[in-house]
Image (cartoon, rainbow, N blue to C red; front, side, top):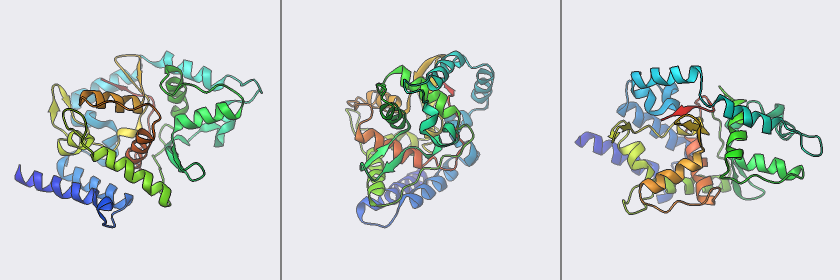
Length: 277
């Protein structure tokens, strides 16, 4: 137990080094995190990190495989396909807004846009496409944008997450996302890292706590059948669970957090959508 505390303390100090004047950057952060998980979870291969807690429990993984053979949400995703393929008033489609019709591109999101000075999520890109074609944008927290995103991201299944952090603006956004991840908040004074780094693999009630790497590779996801949940929807749930006031969807803080979190999942294959408990 004492050795584990030393490892955790060392890792957190290393990861926070950039904001304390050290020269650790995103690549060093990610390398340190992978090494930490190797020590904490020696039986789990890196390529299985995107399965989260399922990779820690063979029975749970078997149940997941069974559910995904005939996913209960297949009809919902088909609604997303209809939205994606429906022509705009100008006869163009969503696929015209993305390279190769939107295939194998979702793993590049979020990215930092130097022109606007902001992180652009995949949902932002969906709405930018609508706006560019004279269509009404979708509400960021709507089921409709979740469904079209779920289908559109499925066109990138198997693509490895490939988020870039390049340039001072991108690095600043990444650092803000990292600070949010490690920052304590709410009545319980919790941070994201307390669960998914300090206590990874341990149980909270009946659920095992997953590793942070891989968490961003499979959103939106479906829970309890056809309940759609986006990544930022999960951020809000976690904030509520720690008795912290959730932020608005598409806030700068959540977009930066998504940027940081997704960068840490680089190199892992995407699978969207999936089922989770």
